[in-house]
Length: 207
Ligand code: AMP
Image (cartoon, rainbow, N blue to C red):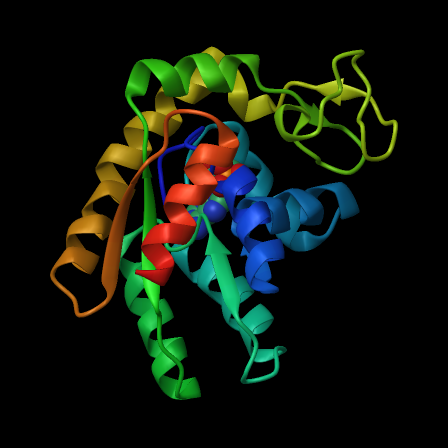
């Protein structure tokens, strides 16, 4: 978990490799649905472009389906989900029904000024969605596939402000929800280099 720009995707990818886990980023799944032009994609589009959250029942359905398709002993990283208390409750029900549990909630803590500057400078590949910040791309093309780098529509300044407000209203209370639950809530300093932050996460997860 963490506000927009906290590094959930970058850190989640590194952790995915380290733990040999499956990572589900709801943001990536929704963007892929948009690129593929599916019904889910067109439903999500208006919410995403406005910096609003896609309705809970839609996102819970997407995550529930993805989890149901996995083998029971798979390790899973959920990136950007849950983002509301109903989503946290929905996830708890899905896990309970499957006889599974959350090992930990990792929350990346980054000051707001830094989030705004990270998001306004961020570029992503228009073809494969890779983040330029984690894969070079200084020449304006994606290091992974050679596609053009663009600014995400929801990284524009007015949308960034709305996403941060939505985070405070809807997602910050989820942290309190987890703090009051038996699940381990790990607060991680999300400033510094990508490698330093990853080390902090790994240390806390194995502690
Ligand atoms: P992200 O890539 O995680 O920053 O997500 C980008 C956008 O996708 C968000 O601003 C929301 O519009 C939508 N989204 C991603 N995850 C969720 C979620 N768990 N619940 C609702 N909307 C989401």
